[in-house]
Image 1 (tube, rainbow, N blue to C red):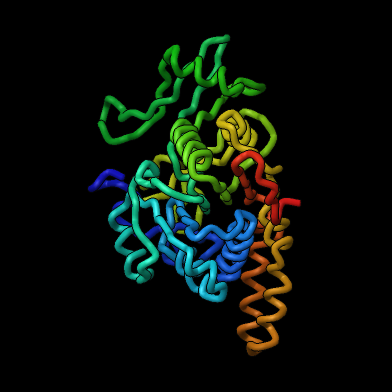
Image 2 (spheres, rainbow, N blue to C red):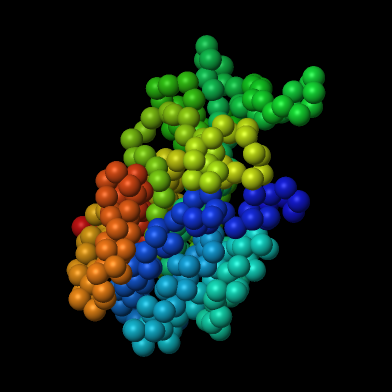
Amino acid sequence: YNKKFGYYMKKNPFGKKGDFITSPLISNLFGEMITIWCVAFWESLEKPNKIIITELGPGDGTLCKDIINTSKNFKDFYKCLEINLLEKSHKLKKIQKEKIKDKKVKWISKISEINNGPLIFLGNEFFDSLPIKQIFKKNSIFFERHVALSKNDNKNVKFIYKKADNKLIKNIKKLNLISNGNIIEYPASAVEYLKTIAEKIIKYNGGLLFFDYGYTKNKNQNTLQSIMKHKYQNIFSNIGDADITSHINYKLFSEILIKNNLTVEKVINQNKFLQRLGIIERANIISKKINFKAKANMFYRLKKLLHYDEMGSLFKVMFAKKKGRKFSLGFK
């Protein structure tokens, strides 16, 4: 978020012309299914006269726009709906504001700005973009990975290793992050976000639903990656112009949310979740009203969302809620 060099401050990274493409951009059926899930969740809360959806990192605004459009088919829900968009980038905020013109939407820069509810926190490829720390273990000593300029020409960027401080070691031990393998990823920013979100859910009622690529088995691995123009590249190439992300450790996220007094449903893949919500049935209904070319395009996009070689299995879905809530649509 550096004003001059920050990746999210100077470009629109989304879509064909950008560096990566997200589920809402692949098909508006994704946004439709999310909205249906939100409506059902609101009904399970006994239809409160206000429901606040907070989208974490709303990208180019496509998901929010799809939620608004689909919500209009559920008049009672739409009447109660408010939307917060958590966005730090002025560049992306501008893009979002051009796309979304609805009085129900407001922009926030911190979760602490939310002071009523019930709340539905939504995130699609949000947590993977947050910074992580990497720690290496060698001969029982922990070293933190840092980034530095080389001393000779001051241009080449390289990794250097410094002995990890006691506070960091204490944190990774507390979170049970030490297992087999010599590299540990500690998502410090995500941990803070999860704690703050849990506090809000406990105070105002509601839940957190998010989609991201990641793993569910507890194993230490290096998942740091850089993508530019839809291709993986060296982490130090095109700094500030390439997307740098890491995979979500779902087991860790689940443990953190449980520690913070929320109930967490079993993590499932995107394929199962969207199919259980009826995405194929919805596509079949639409296909009867459109021409062959549009139909082929729709099912091609649906395959990208669902197929196990595409986003179907790599992308996982997590749902955490206030204790006592029986709602688990899509997860069982």
